[in-house]
Image 1: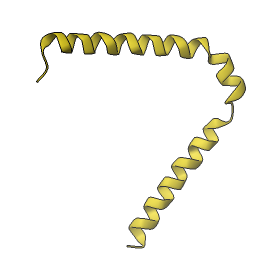
Image 2 (image 1 turned 60 degrees about the horizontal axis):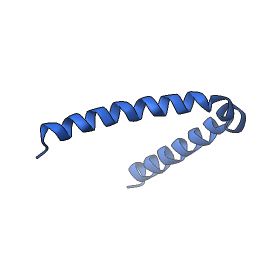
Image 3 (image 1 turned 135 degrees about the vertical axis):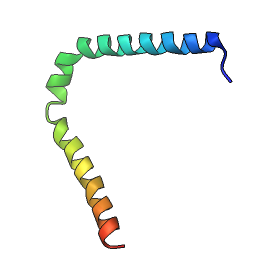
Image 4 (image 1 turned 180 degrees about the vertical axis):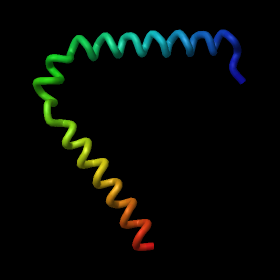
Length: 61
């Protein structure tokens, strides 16, 4: 299916990608705090809406 070299490349790529994403997030942390300070409420709203749809589907079946 996959050769050993492909697995090694995938692992190294994954590690490098995660390191770069962490570095970039920390670099932009002040901007995130400024522009997205109340975005957690939007996330909670979406999750509540999806749970509500699931409850409606289960109980009105």
